[in-house]
Structure formats: structure tokens, C-alpha cells
Length: 550
Image (cartoon, rainbow, N blue to C red):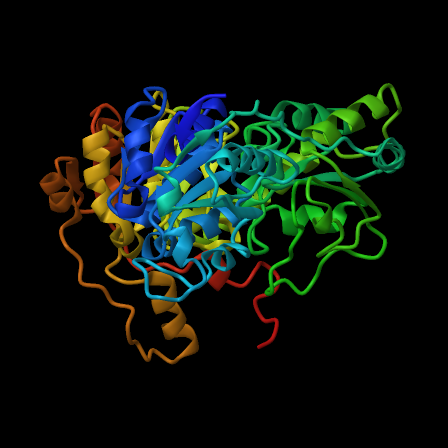
């Protein structure tokens, strides 16, 4: 049994589990880990400028590669700074491992005011992670790491956190490195699959509703096969975009805050198959699933079955395994679907027309972006007007290529998340859309992008305000504006100061040429685009509900 330090046990365990990149920021309690990383050539250390970026970057890396993303921070303020990215990873079901330092083991629970001390740091992470743990013995660290990876890879992927006291990292002991465990994917109940297949085969208007769980299970090919077998159109949540190519004849597109094809297609459906979705209707939608409609729900998290919408058949299973089982069970059965290609096309065209009427400038900008990008380009849709409308107007043609912050709606996440995505996919185009307010959260990571050669293109849409909140003040508070106007730098000049390429446009009309040049630049690029303040989808009443509540 080899002798190693706690830090070596941690780093060697990470390497054994296939970790290739760690996003981190050093500090006194974790310097032994950095020293151990020096001797591990298989792991790349990416230095960030703020701890918030460690988990955002790890999240972008994880969601676009399918591999766990790893972040490394000091305890106390470092760990707390990382919580926004960890909460986002939790909301998006992303396998992120946060390694937090910890104060000395002999000071734990003593409240002595040790450097970076939090009374009980694990309590902070219990509601932000699927699992968290601490090791205070060197020979227990590899087992803790294996537990962390098992939790991330089994069932519903979600982040985990582990921590090791400062004084344990340099300690040495006889330590084994156990073999990694394979991912635990839950097989569906065959009886429930038969019941679901019977409902779907007999449906006259089946409809597939695909959520973010389809990304986690890498089920794109099988889901398209199932849609074709059932002759069923497909709608997605923003997190589910890419579940099938949105240029497929069966794709209706995304459903967001009651905008998009869902409000047309859902009332027509008699059986709805929800795959990897919480099926949450937003507050401004006064209708939901009707009593005559049947719902089949497949989800890796059994707690989601029937949580928001009662499920006629609820199947706890990995999405891919569940869809494969449905395909096998359907076999050569006769299907009753009455959808025609003309009907599906008409729904898609009607939804598209409605979106163009509501947001003509946003759609023009989004279409310009899409024209310049490869089919498999990665788009990180920021918490900003262009990002919101991208959920509805940006066609996604490949899996693992569209990122949102889901229900966490994390302002400032887009740029650092895109950096992590690019680290994991150096050969693919990666573009982040962000507002001027959101870009300010992590603009210092331009230094990281330049230092590490992370050639992301960032589109900063500048309306000189926190747009959605400003619009809210105008509409709900009688124009009583306070705290929503921004004083901004010249973002293009800021990028140049950091050593990146900066481009400042006089209007959105030059965006296509600027983006084309940026994608060829082989350097990090920031393009500043002036736009007026425009309402996001959630501040516009859905079609047919304009006067509800008035």
C-alpha cells in the first residue's frame, strides 16, 4: 500500500476518475493541493480571477462534454463565492464537483475565528448539492472522492461538494486508490413500459415534451427514432433544446413562459410523453393539462414524477434507457397517430409568426447569429433579452450545444460558463450572449481567457441598464426608476486592455460581419452591440391571454 499525503490522495483520485481539468483559485488552505497538481501532468489547472468563475466554468465544461467539471477553492469566502455557480449546476442537473478547503481539523466546530472559518460549512452546501462530505483522515480521501463521483454519475446528475481540513492535506499515510465505480443508470420497470407503450400506440394526437434530462442521458438519436415511430411532434423546454435537431420535420421548437408552439400543440394532445422534464407551468399560464389528457412521464429523479402534473404512468428511469425500452416495446405495433405533416408545419409556422410579431428586432439579431455559426456551435444564452428570446428563436441543431441557467436565472453566468465550455470543446465555436449588467459580473475573467487561450466570442448587448428590472419599474411601478440604470465602460476597449480583441458596433446591423471575423480571430473576442431596452418574453402576455387579470 503506497504512502501518500492527503493532497496526493485527492489529486491521484481525481486523475483516476478521468479528471482532465480543474478550475481553481489558490489560497493558503489548499496550497498542498496545488503542489500535488504540479506533479499530475494529466490534469490541466485553469486559474480563474474570482471563485464564482470556478463553478460556472466547471458547469459549462460538464454540460458540453458529459464529463464532470471540477472546481477548487478555499473555504469560507472562496466557497461562498462559488455557490452561485454551484446553485446553477444544481438547477441545470449538471455534474460539478466542488473541492473546498477547510480550516484545521482541531478548530472544526470550535468557533475560534480561524482563518476563513464558517461555523459548519457542510450545512451551507446541503441544499446546493446532491451530496457533500468531509474527510479528516488521509486514507479515507480516495473513498470520499469515489462516493462523490458515484453520486454525480448515478440517477439524476447534480453537483457535489467535498472538503478536507488544512492540516490533513500534508499528512501522510498508507493509502489505497480504489477503482472507480461505473455509472448507476436506473432501468425502467417493464410493466410500466408496457402500460406507457399501450397509451402512446393508441394516441390520436401524441406529443413528446423533452426537458433537460434528455441532455443528461444523451438520448437525442433514440428520441428522434421514437418521435418518428409514434409520428409525434416534439416540443422542448429551453434546457431540452437540442434533444432533437430543430430542423427536423417533427420538431416544433421550444416552449417558454407560454410562448412558442406549446400553447398551440398541448391543448390538441391526448397523450403527452414527458422525458426528463419537471413539467412546470409558469405562473402566468392559467391552464395546464386537462382531465381527458394522459401523461407518461420518464425521469431519472423519482421525486419529479407527478410533482407538478399528475402522471398517468410515471417511470423512474434514465431517459435513454426509458426511451430505448419504449421503442423496443412498441416494436411493430400499429400506431393511431393522426398528425399530418401539414398540421405540424402549420403549428410551427404560427408559433414562429407570433414570436416575430412580438420581438422583431430580437429575432433579426438571433437569426444573424445563427447564420454565422456552425451546426454544432455552442451557444450560451445569457440572462438577458437576446438570451431569453433565443430560447424561442434560436434553432439548435446538435445536442450539448445550448446552455441556459434554467430556473436559477443566474445573472452574470454566461461568459464564465462559455469559457468552461470552450475548454472542454476547443475545436467547436463557442459564443456567449450577455447584457451589459451581466457581463460586469465576471469581466475580469477576460484575463483568464487571454492567459489560457480560451477563444470564446462574447456578445455584449448594451442597453445601459438592467433591462428586465427597468421595464418592470416602467410597467408595474409607474416609471419610478431607481437602481436600474448603469454607468458602463467601453467594453471593447476593456477587452483590448486585457489583451483580447474588442469590437464596438454603432448598431446591430454590423453584427454579422463582426461575428464572422471574430470566429476567425483565434483569440478571445468581445463584441459590444448597442440595443434599446426591449421586453423579455416573461413580461409579455401569452397569445390569447393579453387581458387575463385586467
